[in-house]
Image 1: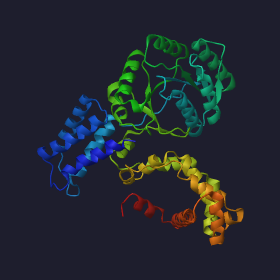
Image 2: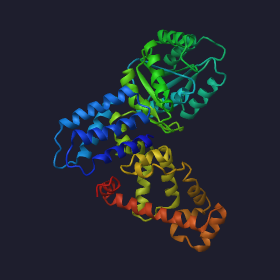
Image 3: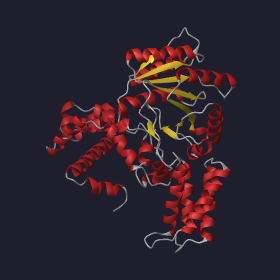
Image 4: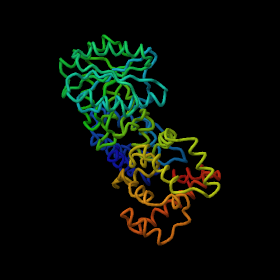
Length: 442
């Protein structure tokens, strides 16, 4: 996410390295590179120009503190301006209506149906809601089946009527079902089109008028760059929506849509999709995103994701095992499975300050843990619970059973021991020191 933009901005700030003060000449040179980086990220030319003008005015008006270098000051100003450009603050969804109705709109292929399921799961977990998903795409043959699969994956109810071809009637009938079955959120998945057309808009307006949604969300594919921004503007001019959803931010996106859609449409980005898994949804925080773009990481979001997968009972059991030196491979495996649920591995690493730059050109396989799982699966229950039993003959048998080499087994043992030491440090009250080391503060 934003790897290319992050690298080019970092290169731009290098221009100021070694300078004792900010001058009009060195700032102009730096901001020329910043503007070029923004344009390469598919940011609208006018917005990129206005952005650099604002940064220049603030930079030349600031006095560099003795504790700050000119490049550090400029990074701070750029971060503040990026945050403002993307909306300054996070904006939630309005769920006051009973039941709250969320109307999902967007073009075909934007990830609207998948996001409908992600949002349902998010509301179930975060706000303890009981969502009802409504299939109002009566045109695409597999649309209802897709929503039904998504609903099953997230454990949400679905309303469908395969005989009815009027999406307005389907939506109204779903509202009655929601009231009867006490669903407090209704999420309506509408039909997408290959492009915004009169038929699509007439239908969306009719559904909107009939159900009077508390939220109308427009889903756009972040990988389409300025096309996504232009589509959102056209749609908003025709039907005044409440917020934008950016999907596929984990893909090969240049970042232009995330950076400019708020200033062009004047509607907040509310959520972002960061992967294919149903848990891969994040609330959009402009300041955190600005930190990540500038290579500063996003420890807060990383901790929040970890907390979502955190099982208190399991944690207590593992803590007791660590204290008694009984932490085994089954426990190691359960920790790995929790990490996997947190999302895309490269995305997670990018949240750690400084690591994003190092991982820029490194291909991180999301199946990196598969080999570990196979090796542990080839151990006997006794070996998994008593790691100290491991010897050469056992390693040889496990290697044959898992199709791995002895070196692979030794590498796993080393990783297991390192994790055990790290968890003991946390138990011993050294967690803050570890976090400082991770963040490069020591």
